[in-house]
Image (cartoon, rainbow, N blue to C red):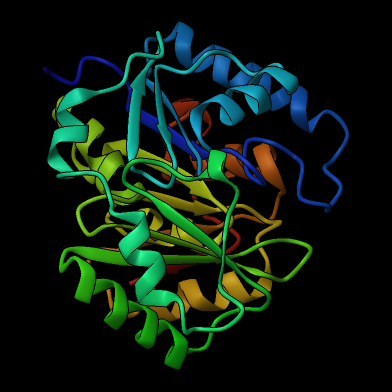
Length: 278
């Protein structure tokens, strides 16, 4: 497929497209976000909503905030891909291998106190999710990773911190899954390079995609610890591009689009206020 459209637009849902993480948006922010998505779709620009939520819950958020139906859904922390009709992408599913053996993973993690499985509806065939009452230490990260790879060698641990409770959200997924892998899977279907792929986010589980060589944007309401983590990880990624917006939520997305000259092209900002770049 050839790139006969502006670019691939992708964004995290909660705290990025949706102004729902506690910090107040500017008046009219949601309306500007709604108009942006509609304009992109009318310009034949593919729009991808990326979420840690399972699809039904992600669609509830999209409907509640009256956002346009996207071209693609990436759900359950990049373990599931759906098209606009809701049809699951079977090729993506096949790439992730067999479903996880959650009972074997439970047994492997049993002796690690305070790890609690998340609700059944938040699990997925290729995702086993847990809660931990506080951000996990590097030592606990290493221990969990060691134990899950004893069950299946091609697994990874993805972690973020829930706002405002402060508890850790832990997702065990295949190593070739995740938001970054799923986003690039879609980008390659359109024959796009990183300078024509846009992604905005606000949390720790967005960083892998944000720093994967796309036009990445952290919106202004991103917690400070995520900003710090982003800067540390960016230094280790040769091709990473990351802009930190001042504006919150959808306004930060619009600021990022202008920074990269993607939308609207004639109004791209020549000099950003803040830029984290190699």
